[in-house]
Length: 287
Image (cartoon, rainbow, N blue to C red; front, top):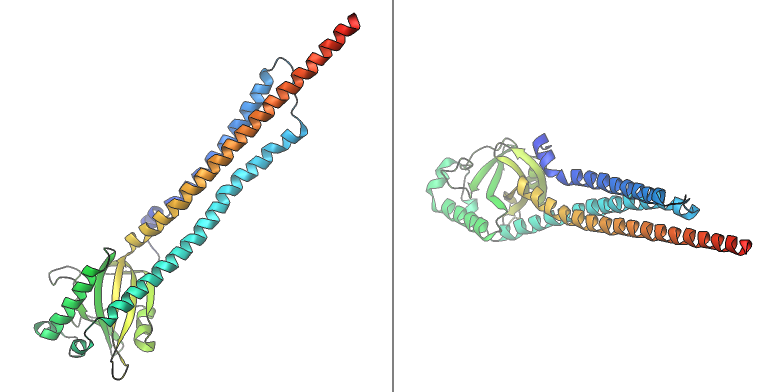
């Protein structure tokens, strides 16, 4: 599901930073060129820029635009790759956690509120809680779901029973996604997100739990990461490229000013030498 406008504006601040970088580079280029023009106009004689110098302005302007543009392209490609790596990492974590679950105890559960009174349920919940504690801080919730009569329901949840987000056994999950339903049908793990439901907005990983004897899917283990935390990790990755591109742009801008300064100095020297030669020629002619 698409994020809200507020989440879009918060998550896409780096694009605004890039637009600001474009504007500042263009502004600095124009200011630098105008300063060069004014310095030439202050000279006691009229100086015309050489033809090569006239081409430097559009060339440097193009370079200053290309540097952020290339940085943007690298940032977008790197962010997509990093997002894919994060999804693969979440899938691996869900798979490893699924291997540690007591499938025998899970098969004793019926997906009804009365399960909470039995030892199998307590052992399954204890294992889910230990998985969540052992996981990194980004894992918000760990749970097991079942599917009965084309309806997805909860077997167990790692949330405390007094939590507002606690899902009791047998609670119907009406917002099941196609990926979650496919995990029951084809027995393949999947990572989806951002998913928005009544519990929040998440990046979720699902992995099927199988009967060791028949290999039938008896449940699906789910792990949730808060989408705000997920986007914050992607944003921190993008910040690196923004800083790197900004530094590269500053270096190019410095080279632009340096080149223009040397060009102005060379123009002054050349004009000064020309005037000295003219004066020397006039003095020789008078003699």
